[in-house]
Image (cartoon, rainbow, N blue to C red; front, side, top):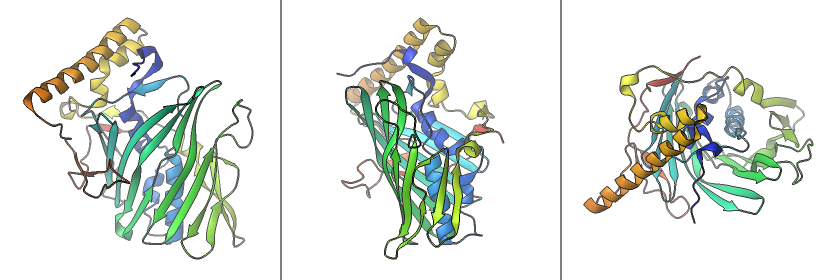
Length: 337
């Protein structure tokens, strides 16, 4: 049985926007630092690990974003980084993200499918799919997965858990990061929201490893050769001085843009007019059902606008897509800096 949440359990934002913000909302541009020509392969890999940690932002306890509708899009630019997302499948729900930064030689593909499992007092969300980051000038491709999300009801909490693996075939470096959280009873300790792990070559001994027990407000790396410790991720730098995206070119915004699709629902939530929000949410859902019914009557199959199913998917990656365009164009919505 599928349960529809009332708007009082939503915060006024689509999950598509929440995914995109992980990439383009940052006070410090650590993504472009990954492609620096002033560092060696190990340092670049270490920076990519720090960037991957920055993707896992804390959730809002007790509230969830809207479930994206089929064909919904989100297109935002931040500095020279252009990010575009599309909900490419509804059943199962699959989101595709493509981001490019021509100035810094960055190309990112991200495909994911959340699979929730109810476990009594909590919901375990397995985030299937993978993230691929290419540093074009260095000819390096980094592949990583996402940690899982645990949503607890007693006590209320949203946590990232599980193991993330990062690998770069061209340099031979790999990383294994283990995300852990507080105890069942919510006791605060040094292990709350922590990440531990190591960076290593596939054959020689480890080169460096994150210090055990790090709370990922800051994550340090320790050089096993006696070089000491240093910070590779600082949440305060990433999350401070954030600015809300602004609409630069209203005429270029697509009707499928997340903010437009859910605009009336968001207005109802922000004004605490729950009846208005409820009706607006129902209207969005009914429109999707009507469109699906019309496609079936015409014998049409849904085709994404910006992505196409990849022949490289296979059984391990059945939800992998390829972007139709090589570069993501500048967006009508921009993040000021």
